[in-house]
Image (cartoon, rainbow, N blue to C red):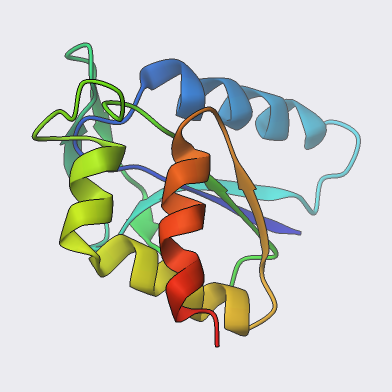
Length: 124
């Protein structure tokens, strides 16, 4: 099982790190579970909402995930970096929509659900 957690500048740390820890621990029971932090652009450093710097391991969808986890962050404050900014840009929601069309199971944490909602206009 391939799980990708997409991160982007301004994501909320807990929204991505907690699911990463849970899926990583699942590997103890099911070694075939793969979990990866990914971005739209591949391996690069991302700065989260509270300043944590995280290096993504790969590119979103490079290897088709079974599950995509979408964190939130920055939605309520309409921050220039975070879920709100990503929804306004539209690139991440479009990629989420493509993965949905490809049969990927979607999950979100907190305001990551707003990015899933923003992707719905492209689900057809």
